[in-house]
Image (cartoon, rainbow, N blue to C red; front, top):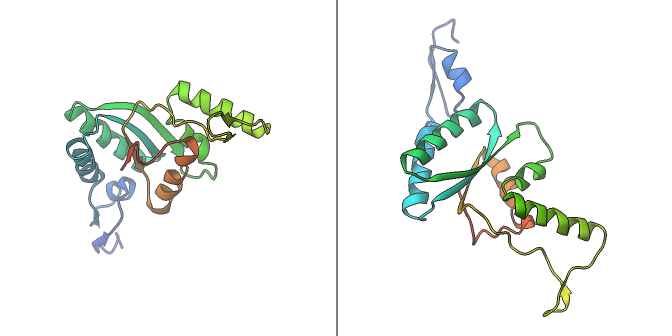
Length: 171
């Protein structure tokens, strides 16, 4: 199509395609526009101040991360954690776990080792096996910068870390 000089419009954003062609145009919002709107909403409406990011390790992720950094800096907001994961991984949980603060991750791993060894963890008041306590997070908003169904997969792992969607905003 490029040799025929036919303009092509598409609903996808990929800088490598756009930058390497003179006749390709995206009709999708730019990542910076999406990020600005999301962080504006989080800071003004949700009153978020501290952010963690789960982001795809790709050209798209790099563009998103640069936009996130700029948007946070412009609003004097804090980036407390940044976790990038490979595009082709089937094992996403090791990356999702890294959003926990270091001391909370160590607690989580210790409890999981005890559970894996079939050690019982009891709540003395309820006299039953309990889940790990909700971790103390140093962020109030988690940005998941990825596409479609993988966002749902990433978010579905949060409760297994003890992270309640009532205690953290996910955008």
